[in-house]
Image 1 (spheres, helix red, strand yellow):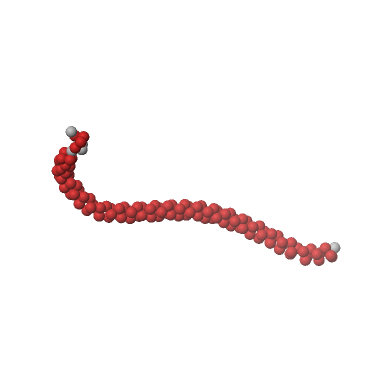
Image 2 (image 1 turned 90 degrees about the horizontal axis):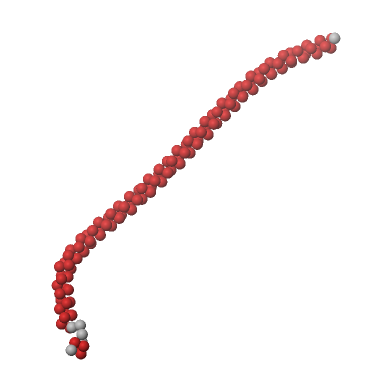
Length: 128
């Protein structure tokens, strides 16, 4: 019995300390579980935000690409307009030349017809 008393006297505070430590461990584990759940929620929110960010960045890139294509089209159109403005001068000159040729066309045709009439369509031997 005296052995039981000595053992109980030494073990009783250790059992009490074990119970306190177990209750602290349960409390710490419940806090850990809550922290893990909050971490998972935050990780899900980060993943959703990252998805939104990636979508926004892709849309931004598409808009920038479209802006670049539009800028290149405008530059090409400006070059074309500039080239055509130079051509306008040439076309204007050609129009005035064509008008002159048109007024001379009737005289040229009359001249050709009279030359053909003078030369005749047959040789001397065939015409007789």
